[in-house]
Amino acid sequence: MTTTARMILIAGLPGAGKTTVARKLAEGFPRSVHLRVDELRKMMVRGHISPADAGGWSDALAQQCLMESEAAIAMATCYTHRGVTVVLDDVALPPLLSRAYAGNAALHKVLLMPSLATLLARLEQRQDIYDATFSAAAPALHSMMVSRNKDGWTVLDNSRWDVEQTVGEILACTEQRRT
Image (tube, rainbow, N blue to C red; front, side, top):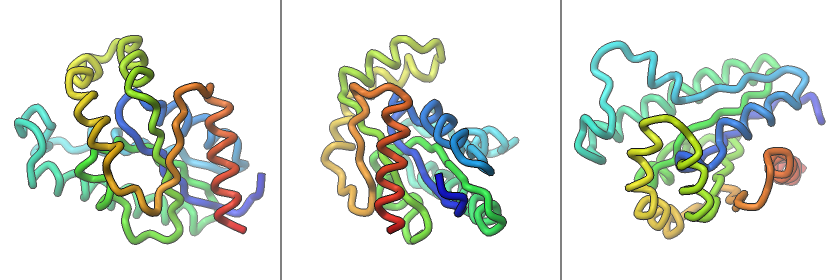
């Protein structure tokens, strides 16, 4: 692997494999940070809006997600300017796909898009209450995600790949873009 710092976003719906893949990808660089945008969300002490609190998607929730994305990019930029590769992972809900992380030429955006059957099977294996709640909404969100404009994104169907294969595909795509 090259030692030049880079900024890679791994996005997708819950159950797509973002966190596992992002962590493994970051482990392959000599100096790296795995930045979980979910952790930034948890840092907000008061005034945080969850999708359940908002009763679904709302302008206020969109603004909050945009703020979290901007904070993640600011942190990632700080690290990459100092030679540290940053691998971000963030949920990509269909209403945010085109807006979140737009306009950052240094950011390589990867969308993990496993099949709906794979996504549901992965969610079923997990123990988080959020995942159980999300399972009901997953078919509609997956359908919306499939139909969204994904210009500027590398879209990977990782349904049949293990973590190492997915990381290999991401590395191949990011190297191809860099040359």
